[in-house]
Length: 171
Image (cartoon, rainbow, N blue to C red; front, side, top):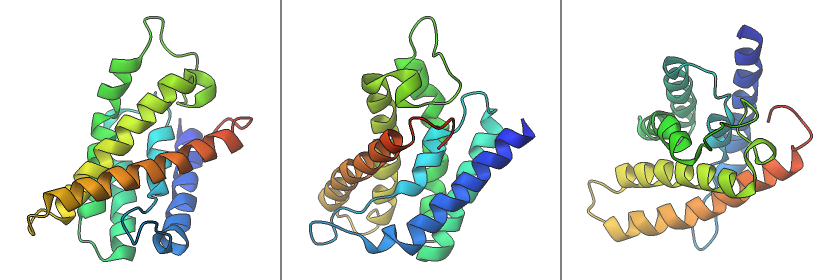
């Protein structure tokens, strides 16, 4: 369990660095769509991790992004929300006999179930994130637009990472 947790934490650190060094400077549609690929490791964490570890990992992942982007607590809150809803999303899409692997992936879940799983979690994360960012200004339509466009952009990146890493056991 410790080796599995350490391997996932190193992967999370890699995705945080990718996010803050490269992806934070990528945007489409005049800044309306930005990929938030740092959430991919949170989506890909093994299903056997206890919820308290998930919440801690989500918090510290979001906090690291907050430190680099000067958004006090926004990403931490959104990442914790994502990992909080993860078991509920899994319960909705889980087949009766369960999944064949403890790692969520296209290979273990199938394309449709993985797309649903990751898509719902990305939407939850992005609506929470942009809801917090635009909450005080009353720009609800702007928040919805950013959330939808960024969700699509992020989901494309997640599916590309999945396709390129199908032969590997972890992300």
